[in-house]
Amino acid sequence: MAKSVPQSMSSRTAVQKALDRAVSGGEGGGLPGAAAEVLDLRGRWFGAAGVADTTTGRERLPEEEFRIGSTTKTFTAALVLQLAAEGVLTLDDTVEQWLPGLLRGNGNDPDRITLRHLLSMTGGVFNYAVDEKLASQHYGAAFLEHRYDRYRPEQLVEVAQSHAPDFAPGEGWTYSNTGYILAGLVIEKATGRSFADQVEERIARPLALGGTYVPGDDEHALRGPHTRLYSKNNLPDADAEIHDVTELNTTFAWAAGGMVSTTRDLNRFFGELLGGRLLPPAEQREMFAVRPTPEGKWIPHTSYGLGISSIEVVPGVTVWGMGGAFHGSFCYTYGTRDGLHIVSQSINADWNNPIGVFTEVLRAEFAPEESAPADPAR
Image (cartoon, rainbow, N blue to C red; front, side):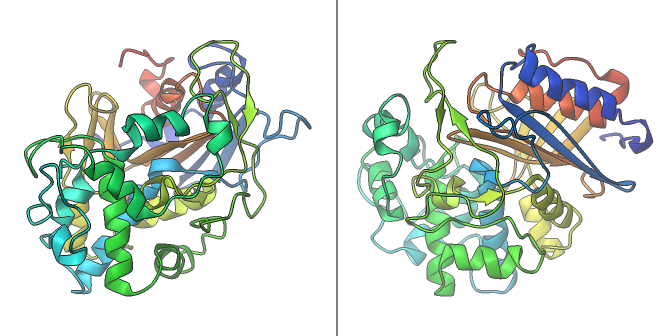
């Protein structure tokens, strides 16, 4: 059993040092800006290092919006589970029941792929994001020519179904954005409303998440106060040119990774979710029934449920939440299972894979007696 986290012992000094190292050097160093907001029984604490804007030198602030990438998946899963609680659908419903004729060919079997498979990454549907042609436009130097390209969800599914599935439904695990694109389409079919509207009506507005939303199909800028977002376009060279990619089109990721939020909003959302106030008990159990992710398939020392993951920060200390990345932005939000102690982190750049930085902050906050710079091999 995971031991409880001694909140009074958490070291904000160590958290701040980890953020400082992120921008000055060390593990994942050389990044423009890093921020972390902690929510616990003592209130809120916000720490930052570096800048939100490399041109003006403006500091990072807690109200800043940024792109949250795959943390979107937790919102999508929560919506599906809310609909399940209302009896609108069940997790055992199939893709074919809700989206007849959409997924077909190349061995894809929509009659066997359930909504539970989609949310748990066990459906086997190919991840469209790693399709060679699509990836060549979305990653690398070509991205600057394609940053405003608009995609329909059905187009992304079409790319996925041009490939054979990775495995038969329920017989493996692989990280696939396609499952969450399909889940977003099911949400729209089941409610008759857009995915963006459902996020706003069911989650953002009730929880007063003023900086959390799904951008419109042709909405390229961030709506509120925001950090600038910087990218090397996945080029491996240390001296690769840095580009400001704050403005872009996120329909490439949509219900799998296209949302915007803030550290404060993410702490509030995950606090309500972990605390059992967003979903009824049965659906809560479904979401948090995690299984270890296969070695080499995702982040080490993680388990995955339905749009939620857990990380063993150190032996005996486990935190729950989700992380995400999109062009120019990485974020990580994890907390205790009761939702009373949460840390949301944001880095406004997409190079030097900052998982080590994020892990170092989690250790400093949740395992202060063992806090040390993260071992990149962990």
